Length: 212
Image (cartoon, rainbow, N blue to C red; front, side, top):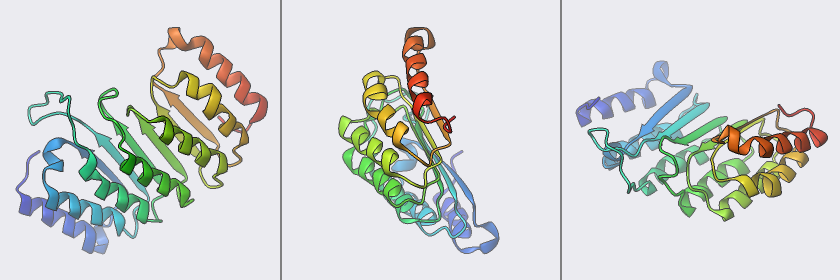
């Protein structure tokens, strides 16, 4: 729903400064219309960065125009202010970031580094990322964090294009991990990828029987 800017800023300031309304969970749907409002984005970023009670942040990326029509080009870079806020707030224990359109958005290096920084801080218990086009560099860093983390208990990945990555990079990292209790991998075409999924699960259970 479109609200006047003063109304939106008033809501955010109440969330930031009124102890009664400090959220523990923050769900944010990013659209081009919202990202054009730099003042509001900065306000939301501050709300996330300095939220004293904030523990769970869910960010949904929806690349559509004001009429709901899907866009081919979508500039996500301004949202780095929000991701920076997430990375800097050590009270945030769970981060879920999902694009609602399949591989419409490339995760830029700056955004990828902010996510890796958050994982490196060892403050996350749960992390999910989905439906972005991910670089091999980011996937490599992600696997290293999964291998080395001692805090992450849940990891989720929603992506169709991860066949080679799944067995060659992610599987060894998961085998060596000692903190994860639950794993969610989605986006597969079940009939086409059935054998891959079977092989992955069998090999994982050989080494890590705690992981579900």
